[in-house]
Amino acid sequence: MTRSRHWPPGPRYAAAVSSTVATVALGHPDFPAGDARRARCQIVVVDGPDMGRAAAIAGAPVLVGTDPTCDLVLRDPRVSRKHLRIETGPEGQFTIVDLGSKNGTLYQGAALGQLAVPAGGVLRLGHTTLRIQPEPAALAIEPSRSRRFGELVGESLVMREVFAVLELAAASDVAILLEGETGTGKEVAARAIHGASGRARAPFVALDCGALPESLVESELFGHVKGAFTGAMQARRGAFARAHGGTLFLDELDSLPLALQSRLLRALEARTVRPVGGDDEVAVDVRVVAASQRDLAAAVAAGTFRPDLYYRLSVLRVALPPLRARREDLSITARALLTARGLDVGEIDGPGLARLAAHDWPGNVRELRNTLDRAVALSPGARTFADLRLDVPGDSSTADDELSVRADLPYAEAKQRLLHAFERSYLRDLMARSDGNISAAARTAEVDRKHLRTLLRKHGLVPDGDDG
Image (cartoon, rainbow, N blue to C red):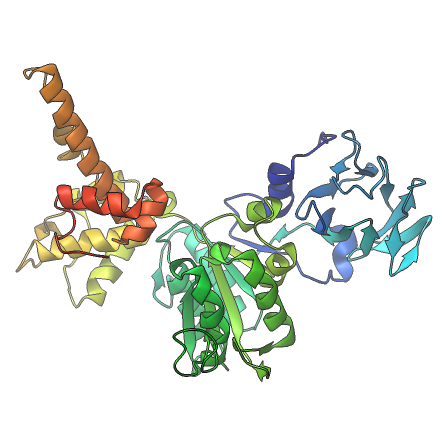
């Protein structure tokens, strides 16, 4: 492996932490186990101006300092140009050599000149804190023999690998980070983990961090006392308290404001919460499953997500694959969705299945569910899958005609018709991806929410009186 002398914070950190997109499950313990000496390690900035930057310790000495030629480049003004060197030693030890730095290097509160430090060791230099920790490793687990885990279904190898990981994870209280595109079933997976765990009889509470105004997130998480703020007419229990004894699912975790991330970390570590406006700590016993569409490792590198919270919540990371990467699951998934609606339409096969397989499903299972629901609504009395009137987004039978260029018209009119058709097709696909949520669609399209609603009304995609 050829090692770059200077890694930018985002790509380098993401590469060091995230492994490959196709990996089903990764583990990186907060406290490295005894076999850490056999794993590749990295040096990570866990606090300071460059929080999130990292460098792999791959055999050759690693230089840390402010000089652009260093392997880990820091901006901390109290760090020397070439501050320290890290060398790989025997039995999982790493030799730290201070290179005559102006302000020194501290380990366990004492300045060092040269010292052997184990994996998990924390160093302090200037205003920066570094930690040596193993890189995440892919978990080698035999695929499950089951084609279902809770409400998740699939026959593909990748889904049976996911089932195997979730089956094992459900038996413990380990923190889990579910990753995947919108509509891949992260909340369904979290509910399935809860249902298969020893906490199944206790509450399952889901909180969408991205759907709440920033001013309300703290109250929703930890609760509030009466009079804590304007409008707090009575005390309210937060998600942690409501999930006591059970499972708390935190969706869209990347949307959590930085100011609240430290409070969330403290609640997880101390197993207590303090309601907004309250004086007393309340003990809570919850198992946390978190989810994010974004790569949280990249968010850490960008400085928008705390690395200590990331490592606390991602003891086990599970990637849910998109539907387009497992088209062989379309038949079993469609059957499960239709059966859940009380329909028995027989074999999912033929031209209808071929049309489903031809679509990329950017909205994944959620988009497939909406497509089937629409087909059922348009096909009263249908007895088989072949009887359903499928309206697949982007289907060549409709999209190609809709977006065709009319050369028999004047240029201005032909252009206007094409733009109108583009708008309608784009908006239909956008809303399918966003499960009909206008706020989420506006964020994806990067347009003002009111303007998006106006466009949707113009094309008859929402009722005139809709304010959602």
